Length: 228
View 1 (cartoon, one colour):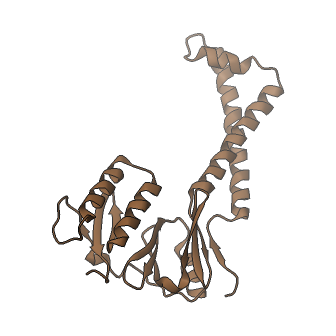
View 2 (tube, helix red, strand yellow):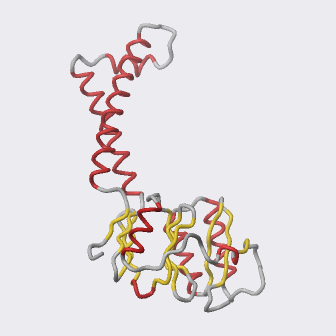
View 3 (cartoon, one colour):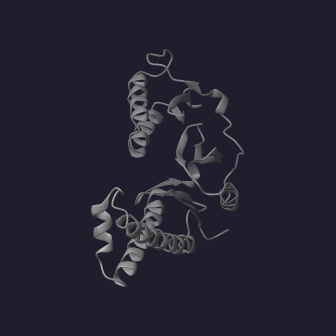
């Protein structure tokens, strides 16, 4: 397989989803117009002011305007979803991950194993450390085909899953400075901090030979082969 494989929402899928949301948004906009007219006819109904404002616009401009507004909101949701979702470009010499307009590349020579851990796309290094772990909604069959097609070893599950332990503050037997980073990451996880901050802390822990994974806002860790 010479051409890189792009895993993520394709342009065709974006157009189809956008069209569907345009129709749905237009339909919801039409329902808003009907509901507003109904509310105006009932003196006791709530939100009379907004309803009267909606119905004060002349037809057919009202129907067209509301339909367009609903459609644009739907299309905006589709485009925002694409911006938020992970896109992965798999080539023989590298794997490039893109999210929120930011990309980072992992050299293919450093990748020992590729697998999906539930909904997480994971690249494993030769020392057992993780080079990437990102939430990915792409169908696993497409990920398998792309990885194997470009010569990467594939695993059906995390070979180190049983090595992970729940982190507790002040744990002994881990590298100096790791507890502070693990605590900072645990706090960020509990607060629901953005993924970028969690990724940076995971990368700092990786430099100390520590791999982390999360389950329902609980933090688990293991040592890489280089430090175990």
